[in-house]
Length: 465
Ligand code: ADQ
Image (cartoon, rainbow, N blue to C red; front, side):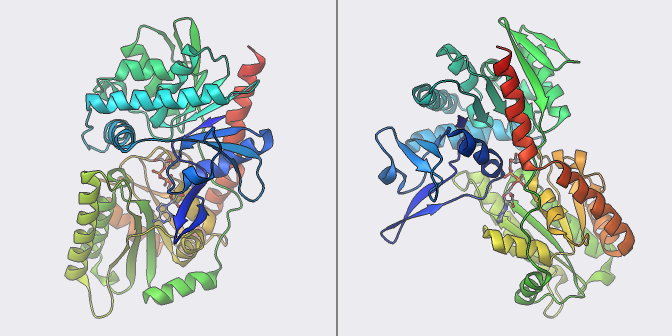
């Protein structure tokens, strides 16, 4: 059984017809095969405009649509619930709390009440959907209270909670007025998973400071009220080999954008989010042209930015600033047809995304803080002939593994500028050598390994009960 906010398939009404959409998501890629193999159930917020039209009396629909193998059970949320639970408690409180990006979290008591109520709704559906021996995989910061609530309802199932975003140092987590309730909720799980060992340690430290519990920093376990929770690292990854676009498809993108082959093109791909360091990236590009003006007309940075969480005002504002900064930098440096920055604000289809990666000479990934960052891995996977170079923020989970990237501090505009220069002038042999090593690392640990490790550890819990 999987509990996640996002559903693997949504049904949408388009011009009177019902069409099925599948969000591009690493989570679905990694976890769906487990549910297909076991005939399990995925419980998620039913957010599609035609979702209600296709379900049975248990709000359930068989999926995948082409060859049904497991059940998708939909939870209906009111507008107020979406606003309090998803936008408020999850995205305005917990998201900024866990990311050290200096965005102040907003802790509204009402939002947390709604968060609690929605967590309870998912738990009731989970209890109702349980048939026989079950392993429960809970996904992300939307559902911190679910594990303990499941225990209260008598569940003895192995529960695995995976937290896809960072866990901050204890001093930061303590800012949260709901700290103790959140931790107690999470510790209902047998295993709490994070992308990085640092987040695991931060979590154990938070438990030890905030709760009266036994925290073991060597074993990474927390014992509370007679139950032990293991804290484990599971770095998420991508499919391998990943589907890629050909060089020709990459060239077509460059033609459409008016970027001839001799121009070095860096590409960034992100949701528009404060944590992704988009304005800092632009500051780095601007600094590059100040420090290396002879690269005018020979370098272009392209950002493909997908607007997200637009119901939250600070996200709308960030979108506006991104557009304004791009225009300002372009006005400052443009010469003739050449513009230093191209901004496309939309979500690319998977083939378009692959073609954009194929068009790039380098990938520019500069989050201020990021649990893992899959774009870094996708870019590396797209460099099939070992050509290309990755510039990566040291404050991403990915940087712990992808050490052959050019690592930068996203707050250091000079550092980003020098890294861009280094990426352009680095000898081809060195680039290939670095890329070969990066590719090997990802090939050896794919999204399927991530899911298998989570399932394997959960089965072990089940067997030792
Ligand atoms: P995200 O914050 O969403 O994920 P990331 O890991 O980079 O960040 O994944 C984003 C995904 O969306 C990638 O697969 C990317 O290709 C796609 N995407 C982004 N912008 C796009 C665009 N404009 N067009 C098309 N596709 C786009 C959270 C955490 C991460 C963690 C993941 C998985 O914040 O740290 O890596 O979960 O655990």
